[in-house]
Structures are given as structure tokens and as C-alpha cells.
Image 1 (cartoon, rainbow, N blue to C red):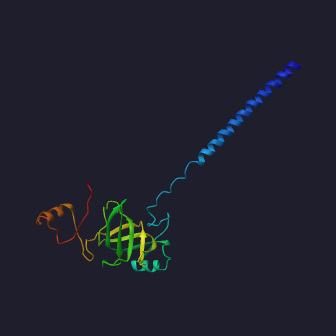
Image 2 (image 1 turned 60 degrees about the vertical axis):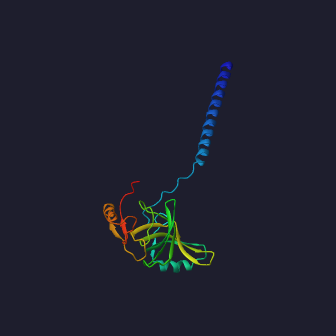
Length: 210
């Protein structure tokens, strides 16, 4: 009986050790799993295309004129950005030639009069638009930035503005563009003398093919 009891105790001890190592392995696996989860970066927020151009999803943009934008910007400290998001409707009066990363800069005014009131600095080109055109009526959306250049001039600007083209304009402030098709453009061009340019400005809507 004593020999039998001793065998029972040995078996019980082995069972306890096996259970101990199993429990330890489960704990270690759980710890490694949690540690690996911490290394996974948080997902990027999805862009919200339906928030009227606000920088934050659900943020509404306040509609203002170019003149109002200059007033608001004048009250900001140099080099600071407004806390509120604004949308400004006006006309493109001058376009910077350089295009980079599907962005281009331009000046705009409340009227198609050539004034440089608000600068859209590296504004986003809308889908299907290869470049901005002087005379176009647009709505830009973003936060106002008060920029002071080396000459001390205060520039009212919106960096990386979202742009909606309301009316396609001509090449010259005050000049209206006649809307035509690509086929009509070919007919008009065929009637011109070689190497000459039309006196009228046209806007052509179509698809980029090459």
C-alpha cells in the first residue's frame, strides 16, 4: 500500500508540472500577441469629400468674398492660420505657370478685373483639369493664412485649397470664353491662316486621350 501510495503521489506531481508548463506557454503566447499588436500602426483617417472642403470631417466652410478674406486675414498674427475654414468664390486673375503634384497657384478677385486679392497657393487641380485658366469663376475652400513677404507686404492666401470651377474663363481678365466642342475647334482652326491665333477665346470641354 505504501508503494502504491508513493506511485500515486509521483503521478500527481508530474501532472501538476505538465499543467504548469502548459499554463506558462499560454501566458507567454498571450504576451507576445499583445506586444505584436502594439507595433501595428493606427489606420489613416479616410478623406471626407462631402464636408464642403473643410479640413476636418463634418466641418462646414463659411462662405466669404475676397474682400472679406483680406479683412479677416489682416486681423491674424503674421504667419498664422485661421481656425475656421472658408470658401471664397471669385475669378482667377493670374496663374503661376508651374504645375507640380497636380497642384498650381493662382491669384483671384471678387470680379474679373485683374486684381490680386487672394492667392490660392498650390491649389489642387480638379479631376480632369490640367491647368487653371485666367478668367475662370471658381470657389476655393480652406483655411486662411497671413503671409508677409520680404518686402513687408501682407498676402492673403489659402494653401492647398480645394477648387471647384464654376465657369471656365478666357485667357484675359474681362474676356468671356465661347464654349465649343473639339470638332468645332478643328473647323474654326482650319479656317485660320497658318501660324495665326484666333481673336476670340474659347473653352473646350472633352476628355484627355494622350
